[in-house]
Length: 171
Image (cartoon, rainbow, N blue to C red):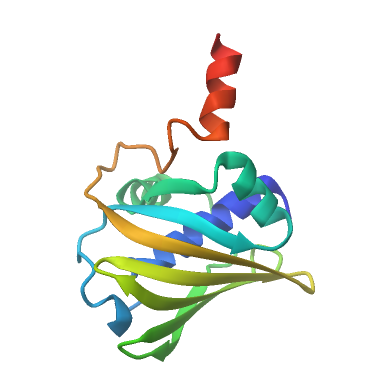
Protein backbone atom coordinates (compact mmCIF):
# COMPACT_ATOMS: atom_id res chain seq x y z
CA UNK A 1 0.00 0.00 0.00
CA UNK A 2 1.51 3.36 -0.97
CA UNK A 3 1.89 6.25 1.44
CA UNK A 4 -0.63 8.36 -0.50
CA UNK A 5 -3.15 5.53 -0.37
CA UNK A 6 -2.61 5.21 3.38
CA UNK A 7 -3.17 8.95 3.81
CA UNK A 8 -6.31 8.73 1.66
CA UNK A 9 -7.55 5.76 3.66
CA UNK A 10 -6.81 7.60 6.91
CA UNK A 11 -8.75 10.64 5.70
CA UNK A 12 -11.63 8.46 4.52
CA UNK A 13 -11.67 6.77 7.91
CA UNK A 14 -11.75 10.11 9.70
CA UNK A 15 -14.61 11.34 7.52
CA UNK A 16 -16.50 8.09 8.04
CA UNK A 17 -15.92 8.24 11.79
CA UNK A 18 -17.39 11.68 12.05
CA UNK A 19 -20.42 10.38 10.17
CA UNK A 20 -20.32 13.13 7.59
CA UNK A 21 -20.80 10.73 4.69
CA UNK A 22 -24.04 11.64 2.95
CA UNK A 23 -25.73 8.27 3.47
CA UNK A 24 -24.27 7.49 6.88
CA UNK A 25 -26.28 8.13 10.05
CA UNK A 26 -24.45 9.38 13.13
CA UNK A 27 -23.73 6.33 15.30
CA UNK A 28 -25.37 6.29 18.72
CA UNK A 29 -21.98 6.11 20.45
CA UNK A 30 -21.20 9.52 18.90
CA UNK A 31 -24.52 11.13 19.84
CA UNK A 32 -22.72 13.81 21.89
CA UNK A 33 -20.39 14.77 19.01
CA UNK A 34 -20.95 18.19 17.43
CA UNK A 35 -23.31 17.82 14.49
CA UNK A 36 -21.34 20.25 12.33
CA UNK A 37 -18.27 19.17 10.45
CA UNK A 38 -15.12 20.45 12.04
CA UNK A 39 -11.66 19.52 13.13
CA UNK A 40 -10.72 16.24 14.81
CA UNK A 41 -7.43 15.46 16.58
CA UNK A 42 -6.28 11.92 15.87
CA UNK A 43 -3.63 10.39 18.12
CA UNK A 44 -2.14 7.05 17.15
CA UNK A 45 -2.07 4.61 20.04
CA UNK A 46 -0.89 1.41 18.34
CA UNK A 47 -0.70 -0.12 14.91
CA UNK A 48 0.74 -2.71 12.58
CA UNK A 49 2.53 -2.54 9.27
CA UNK A 50 3.43 0.40 7.07
CA UNK A 51 0.60 2.55 8.44
CA UNK A 52 2.00 2.42 11.97
CA UNK A 53 5.53 3.17 10.78
CA UNK A 54 4.31 6.13 8.72
CA UNK A 55 2.37 7.56 11.68
CA UNK A 56 5.33 7.13 14.03
CA UNK A 57 7.50 9.00 11.54
CA UNK A 58 4.99 11.85 11.46
CA UNK A 59 4.80 12.09 15.23
CA UNK A 60 1.78 9.89 15.84
CA UNK A 61 -0.82 12.69 15.91
CA UNK A 62 -2.57 14.91 13.41
CA UNK A 63 -5.63 17.10 13.10
CA UNK A 64 -8.06 16.43 10.26
CA UNK A 65 -10.47 19.14 9.10
CA UNK A 66 -13.48 17.25 7.73
CA UNK A 67 -14.98 20.53 6.49
CA UNK A 68 -11.96 21.09 4.21
CA UNK A 69 -11.86 17.42 3.20
CA UNK A 70 -15.46 17.49 2.05
CA UNK A 71 -14.95 20.79 0.24
CA UNK A 72 -11.95 19.31 -1.59
CA UNK A 73 -13.94 16.19 -2.49
CA UNK A 74 -16.78 18.35 -3.84
CA UNK A 75 -14.32 20.23 -6.10
CA UNK A 76 -12.84 16.99 -7.45
CA UNK A 77 -14.29 16.73 -10.93
CA UNK A 78 -12.46 13.55 -11.93
CA UNK A 79 -14.75 10.74 -13.04
CA UNK A 80 -15.54 8.23 -10.33
CA UNK A 81 -15.29 4.64 -11.58
CA UNK A 82 -16.40 3.01 -8.36
CA UNK A 83 -17.79 4.84 -5.39
CA UNK A 84 -17.06 3.70 -1.88
CA UNK A 85 -20.09 2.33 -0.11
CA UNK A 86 -20.41 2.79 3.63
CA UNK A 87 -22.62 0.90 6.05
CA UNK A 88 -23.18 0.80 9.77
CA UNK A 89 -22.78 -2.82 10.93
CA UNK A 90 -23.33 -2.24 14.66
CA UNK A 91 -24.92 0.77 16.34
CA UNK A 92 -25.29 0.86 20.12
CA UNK A 93 -24.74 3.55 22.74
CA UNK A 94 -21.42 1.96 23.70
CA UNK A 95 -20.01 0.76 20.36
CA UNK A 96 -20.34 1.26 16.62
CA UNK A 97 -18.82 -0.68 13.75
CA UNK A 98 -18.69 1.10 10.40
CA UNK A 99 -17.45 -0.40 7.15
CA UNK A 100 -16.51 1.26 3.88
CA UNK A 101 -15.95 -0.86 0.77
CA UNK A 102 -14.03 0.79 -2.06
CA UNK A 103 -13.89 -1.50 -5.11
CA UNK A 104 -12.23 1.26 -7.18
CA UNK A 105 -9.27 1.40 -4.80
CA UNK A 106 -8.09 -2.14 -5.55
CA UNK A 107 -10.81 -3.67 -3.41
CA UNK A 108 -9.95 -1.82 -0.21
CA UNK A 109 -12.23 -2.26 2.80
CA UNK A 110 -12.03 -0.05 5.89
CA UNK A 111 -13.67 -1.23 9.11
CA UNK A 112 -13.79 1.14 12.07
CA UNK A 113 -14.84 0.09 15.57
CA UNK A 114 -15.68 3.10 17.74
CA UNK A 115 -16.06 3.21 21.53
CA UNK A 116 -16.53 6.18 23.85
CA UNK A 117 -13.38 7.54 25.53
CA UNK A 118 -14.87 10.69 27.11
CA UNK A 119 -16.80 13.83 26.12
CA UNK A 120 -16.41 14.28 22.34
CA UNK A 121 -13.61 11.68 22.40
CA UNK A 122 -13.57 8.18 20.95
CA UNK A 123 -11.25 5.20 20.78
CA UNK A 124 -11.11 3.78 17.29
CA UNK A 125 -9.73 0.56 15.88
CA UNK A 126 -9.32 1.02 12.13
CA UNK A 127 -8.70 -2.08 10.02
CA UNK A 128 -7.63 -1.62 6.40
CA UNK A 129 -8.02 -4.76 4.31
CA UNK A 130 -6.59 -4.91 0.81
CA UNK A 131 -4.92 -7.55 -1.33
CA UNK A 132 -5.30 -10.26 1.32
CA UNK A 133 -3.48 -8.15 3.93
CA UNK A 134 -4.94 -6.43 6.98
CA UNK A 135 -3.35 -3.48 8.74
CA UNK A 136 -4.70 -2.36 12.10
CA UNK A 137 -4.37 1.05 13.70
CA UNK A 138 -5.70 2.01 17.12
CA UNK A 139 -6.23 5.70 17.71
CA UNK A 140 -8.05 8.23 19.83
CA UNK A 141 -10.17 10.85 18.09
CA UNK A 142 -11.33 13.99 19.86
CA UNK A 143 -13.25 16.98 18.56
CA UNK A 144 -10.88 19.95 18.24
CA UNK A 145 -13.36 22.65 17.17
CA UNK A 146 -14.67 24.23 14.01
CA UNK A 147 -12.62 24.66 10.86
CA UNK A 148 -13.25 26.15 7.42
CA UNK A 149 -13.44 24.78 3.87
CA UNK A 150 -10.26 26.71 2.98
CA UNK A 151 -8.20 25.21 5.83
CA UNK A 152 -5.67 22.41 5.34
CA UNK A 153 -7.24 18.94 5.41
CA UNK A 154 -4.45 17.56 7.63
CA UNK A 155 -2.15 19.30 10.10
CA UNK A 156 0.61 17.86 12.23
CA UNK A 157 1.71 19.11 15.63
CA UNK A 158 4.26 21.92 15.19
CA UNK A 159 6.92 19.92 17.07
CA UNK A 160 6.22 16.63 15.26
CA UNK A 161 9.06 14.94 13.32
CA UNK A 162 7.24 15.78 10.07
CA UNK A 163 7.19 19.51 10.85
CA UNK A 164 10.74 19.49 12.21
CA UNK A 165 11.90 17.89 8.95
CA UNK A 166 10.04 20.49 6.88
CA UNK A 167 11.57 23.35 8.89
CA UNK A 168 15.03 21.84 8.45
CA UNK A 169 14.54 21.68 4.68
CA UNK A 170 13.40 25.31 4.55
CA UNK A 171 16.40 26.54 6.56
